Image 1 (cartoon, rainbow, N blue to C red):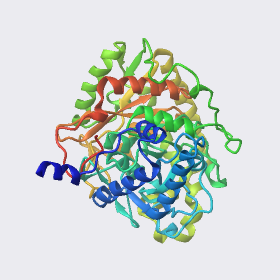
Image 2 (cartoon, rainbow, N blue to C red):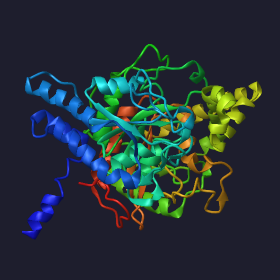
Image 3 (cartoon, rainbow, N blue to C red):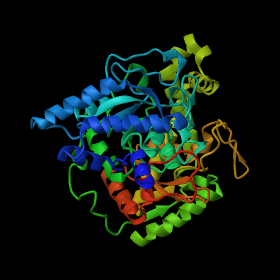
Length: 489
């Protein structure tokens, strides 16, 4: 009797994958109303300790939206792909009628009148927006904290960071609050938290997911939006919904390569892979290297043709990234800097000032160097089908630390240098994916970064799926878990 009572006090865990949830909704085994209620119950259980969801739509409003889905399904209406699935959107993206702060006191009361383009696509596909996921101020930095909502914590150890700037999204996924989430990535803001939280995050090719550009955001473009999920198949499904050309984005690309065979589940054959354990000579913590060395053994069971490389082709890429990032900050936030710098954190101010001080000669040199490095990087794809390297150079660190100051006794000169393993790829429009690669002895996750040619998002996902099925790290509990429960079913 005591055992039955214990079971009754713990509701049955929802399916782990989004594709399973959607199958249950379609078959009628699960109603949208029940899923919505259980989603809010899960958020109430986990979010106080993690702080991943920073703004939550009232339950009654979300239940009404779910009931409309159930009513339509019960009358036999044909429903779109995501019908009834709860979604939380990163707090950088506009959401009509829902508070969108960008983590800044400047926008503490901002409620957009329209949605970002990808949000409108998710809603058109039937997703129900239930709130926003936490992000650092203006998405600046790979540790999620801001003066409005505080710090987001890692579900695998709540004393550690969830990464950033899509830390809220990654933590919400890892703790089972939502099944799909969006992220954005300029220098690793999507890949870094995916690695820290044992989920999948795809930085797609530039233009794969279009953006309705604003005047101040057209120059030095490196930032992209992308899908985040617990599994590769969920990530691929979400990409297909978010992607597709739009005339308002001159760099957008069509869906053709995402709608053709071979299937995601059909593993690619005879791949040549280049493995860079210390890309461009960057320092990597031994704990990261140890886990990834074991991951390479797993990869070799699938693809024996793996050559170790140093990726020296990107030795100067961090300099290019730093200049272009500063220019982007000046363009995107310079108008706020002049009137509201008293409400900005120092790192944001410094990046804007650096951008405003750039000379034409400096920008020209950076663009010339960008072109040279792009050519060198593309030559690698004459030898290799995909590149493999660490996502992060460090393990998740204490939440009280703003950013790591040293790695293996190498001093980090700025608050983004410790993320160079992601930043050095951002100027070159290549798709990059972070996939769970294992855990260190403390039970903290490590991610493997897979990089493909521009436009080869689907091939990248097929390789990632093959690795996922070989290793199944997304289904494994780590050696130790400190803090709240993670999302493992």
